[in-house]
Length: 251
Image 1 (spheres, rainbow, N blue to C red):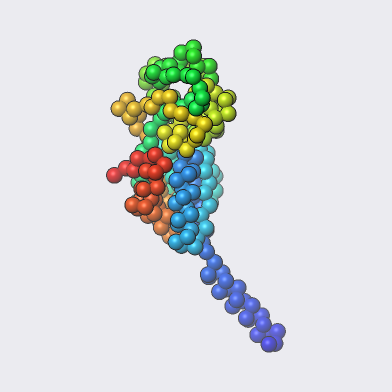
Image 2: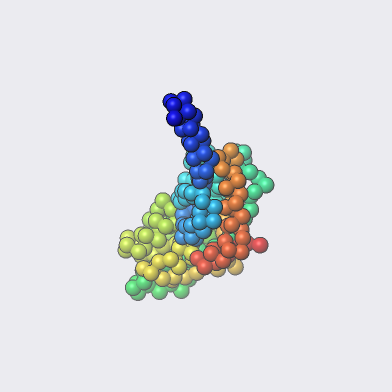
C-alpha cells in the first residue's frame, strides 16, 4: 500500500471508530438519588452502550454549575425551586419537565444511641446538643427542614445547635460518625445506612411536600441519550428501583 492509500485508509478507520464510539451522557442529580441512579445508570449503559457520568451533589450546587455552563444533559433536582430557577433562565427544555418522585423527612440517630424522640420538637430540647442538617439556606433537604421547623415554631432553638453540611448525605455522615446527636435527612438516606436508625418520621400530613423534578438541559450535547435515560427513569423498571430505595413515584 502506497503512502496515499495508507493515509486514506487511516482516515476512514478513524471515521468508522468515531461513528461506532459510545455516546456520553452527563446526568446532574441530587445526592439523595445516588444509590438508585447508580443502579439505573448501570442498566442504561448495558442496554445502550452509552457511558453515563453521574454528577451527584446538592441541587443548589448543580444548578449553579449548569448556570455557569457545565456540560449537563439531564438535571434531576430534589426540589421544584431549583428547577424553576433554571427554567426562568431558559436552561431546560420545558416540555420534558416532570415531577417524578416524592420523599419524606426523618430524624435519625446513631443505631446505638439511647436517645428517644417522641416528636420533632424534641430536637429543640436539652437532650440533643448537635443537630446535623443540609445547609438550610440553599440545599433542598435543609430548606425543607427549616420550613417545617419554622412552621412549628421550633426553628430558632434547632438552628442554635445546627451542624450545617454540604448536602443531605453529609448530614447522614455526621450522625454516623458521632459528630451530631441527631440529623435531619430523607427517609431514603436513612434506609441505606446500618449506622443510624429513624428516631422520628415527619409525616406528610404536616403539609411538607417533597418533590423531585427532572428535565433535559437545553443545549445538552446528547439530547437523544438524555431522552432515553429519562424514559427509563419514568418506566416501570425505573419506578421499581426508586421504590426499592424508599422513594414514592408520582403519578
